[in-house]
Length: 156
Image 1 (cartoon, one colour):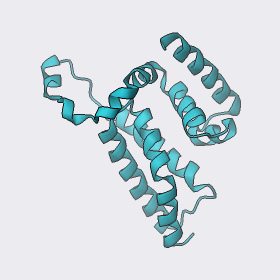
Image 2 (cartoon, helix red, strand yellow; image 1 turned 180 degrees about the horizontal axis):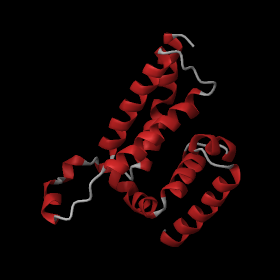
Image 3 (cartoon, helix red, strand yellow; image 1 turned 135 degrees about the vertical axis):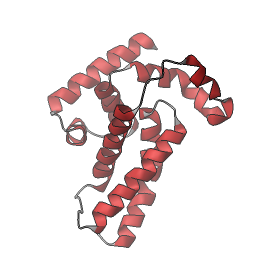
Image 4 (cartoon, one colour; image 1 turned 60 degrees about the vertical axis):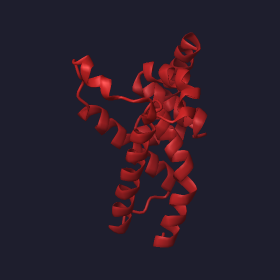
């Protein structure tokens, strides 16, 4: 893959990848954009070192997923409710609220279920492809999907 092909892959994957990260971040568009930018940088640096995956899109989603996990691990839970007062309505786009009920339901799912549901239903990956991205088995992905559907059905 040449540099130009890398740029083409970025253009092809950008919209879906950002949509996936936004859903994974439960509507936090700013965080999703930050993670997407960091994922593309990591992919480009790995690409320039000679790492050239067979499936660029799955590889990119794996990078994004790992960045999301790292971000969640590094988050510090604030016990001080006063620290939340700095959040303004302008920090979220108006159209984000259109999907707020879905984002809230997704946020209540365990991470593996949320990841499987998003990759399967939003991005159209097969269970085998999701297993590769999440580094689990095909059977585990099917279980996560079944549990995720059941949880979402109860929540929505």
